[in-house]
Structures are given as C-alpha cells and as structure tokens.
Length: 466
Image (cartoon, rainbow, N blue to C red; front, side):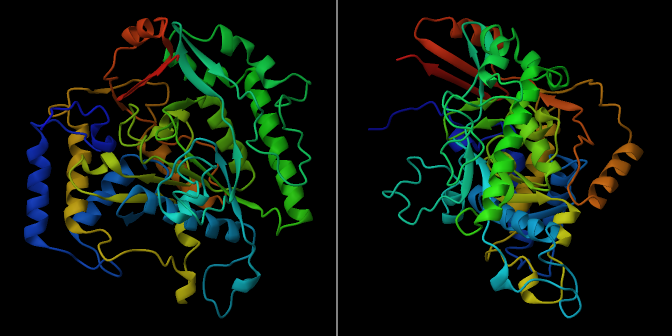
C-alpha cells in the first residue's frame, strides 16, 4: 500500500524552497528548456551559465573566488577540485610551469610524483572512484562497495562539538590525531600522545572545553576569542608535528610515502559520516597551517554550503577562505542536478598553456546545461529574497562594514599570492535563522536516553545513548 512519509532528510538534503516558491524554479527551467535545449559548453557560453556563475562568485565565493567549473553532481565536483588542487601543488613546487610549453621548463609527466591528500576521518565526498580514495576506510569503501579502493590520504581524527546535557562541549579523539600510524612514523601522534610542546595532551589542554564548554553554540563559534587559548596552540603544535613527520617520510621514501598535495575536507559538519560537528577551532587551525605550508585547501560544501548551516558559504563560520570549494544539492533548490567547483585565479592560471595536456581535461556531455544553470541562478536569488524566504535576515558583525574597495584590495592580494593567505575578505551580511530552536534542543539533550544533539542552520541531529 501507499504510506505517507515525513521527509526528514529533505530528499537527500536537496529541497530548499517552499511549495509556494517552487513555481519560480519551474518557470526558470521551462524558459531555459524552450530557449536553448542544450548548448555544448567548451569554448561556448550562454546567459544561464553566466547568471549562475555570477550568483556563485557573489554568493558563497564572495571575496575569494573568481572562476567556476560546472559538473553534474557533488562527487564529480570533488573529483574536479582535487585535479585542480594537485595541479596547483605541482606549480607551487616548481614541478610544472604554466604557459608556452615550448619555452617554459617543466618536469616530464612521467617524472611527476604520485601524491596523496590530507583528509579527515568521517568526511564523505561521494561515490566515484577518485573521491572514494580520498576517504578513510569505512562502510562506503569496503570491498563489497569499492573493490578497487586504495586510500590515498593521511587521515586525521578531528575533535567534535556537540550539545550534551545542556552544554556545548568538545570531545577530543581518544586514539590520538592520526587515524593510523604511518609507515616510518616519527611524529609520535599515536594513542594517547596527541599533545603540545608543554608535554600536556590536547585532552588536558581542552579540559575546560570538554567539561564546562559553552551555554550557546555562538560562544563555541567565537573563534576570535578562542584563538588565544592553550587548546588553539595545542592544535597547531599537533598538526605541525604530524605534517613535519609526513614531509620527512616523503623525502626519505616518496614512493612509499607520497607527498601531501592538498587538504580535502568537508566544511564544519560531516554529513553522511554521522552528522558530526567538527570543532571549528580545530578546522580553522588546520586550514591555516596548510595554507602556511603551501597546501591548496579544498572544501567539500556539497552538504554544508548554500545556507544549510546558516551562511551562504559554510567557510564563513570558520572565518577562513579556501582555494577551492564545491557546491551542489541546495544549489538548484531540489529540482534538477547540478554542481559547481569554485576556485581562485591562481588555480585557474595553473592550467594555462598551449598544449592539450596543460588544460583541465574534465567534463561531460551536459556540462553547464542551461536548464540546470537557470534553475541554480533562480534558486540563489530566491534564497536571498526576504519576501520569499522570511528566515533570511541581515546581521551586523564587526567585519560586515568592509567596503567594496577593501574587498577588491583583499581579492587582488589573494590572487597575487601563491598560497591564498589567511583572510576572510568578504564576510556575510546575511544569515539564515536556525530552523530549530536551540533552547528546545538543549532541553532535548538533557533527556536520559540522549547522548548529544547537533543543531545548526537547517540541521537537527539527535544521538541516542543506547
């Protein structure tokens, strides 16, 4: 028989508009289908693609991104992102030089090193073979699902933030920062030694955050205040120690221990991995350390982006910009598939050249198809429309008064830098009000059978203590 169901996951987290606003997306799709059908995208463009790109660059990419690459789903968008990041790393290392291949020196393709990524245990980036290899071992990567799986990463176990017994608290990984001990490990980040230069473990340094915590989530996300703490310094020390050891192992035996070429991580919240909220202080610190070392930063915002967590770009909650970020799901409001990989001019320039092999050879027949682009552009406008979306509101922050000239200066500086320096050049002036009441979630966390609650933006996840 037919049973009515409550769609608590918004149809794989794609639905973003009310039934009253759905007609706006339907009309956008109809107009695009009637005007264009499909348009082959290489060396071509159409109004809908430019409209959607403008929405992405002035929305989640504001202040840092200048280029958009379209694909059809989040997993493919992440495949593209990692290709971009690895090429950028080759360029930053002086192994590849963009430009005229007849005059610029580059290593031969066969001499370029195999590389791996720095990633977080619990991150999920999709079902294609390349994205599977960027993920730590899990039910998704086992031989029943992915017989060819070969992990190509150094996987860190992140501390998590959760509302427990009325307080937001941080739980440190019990087994240390590294998921597994690497071959020739010299960093000491094995079970129980995740610590700092003072000899204290991060668990000891973060005792207050783990026991006392904060009354509100906003306090836990007050990163300006949290940056000057022993826990922040402990995070940086531990991350640096792991990366120093990884570099040393790579120099000793690059075939056994390929060099790290990018940080790849879901942003703020692990979705399919369990709705775990990453301690934002840890993730901000990780991004900054990687930038300082010249590692391109790739954020998977397929789940978290496009207002899911209350901001258009989830990176805004971390007050840190990526080099590359991916968007899908809410991008089209739940009507049609489309994804976008958004990046900087520096990453784009890494693919300049006069030979085919220098380009970014990725795409599919329906890349940037007009119907998808038109719907995405309309969805992005709809989300920001206070008439259609009464949950949107302006927020006044210390940095929201940044004027256009400062944003332009910061953007130009970011493009000129080879490592996309630490900055939050264009803070949000809009936010989505939480769809779930934090006070009610707090009361829920006090129930005897509830271990913890995660509530942020559109997300409410309850962990049962069984």
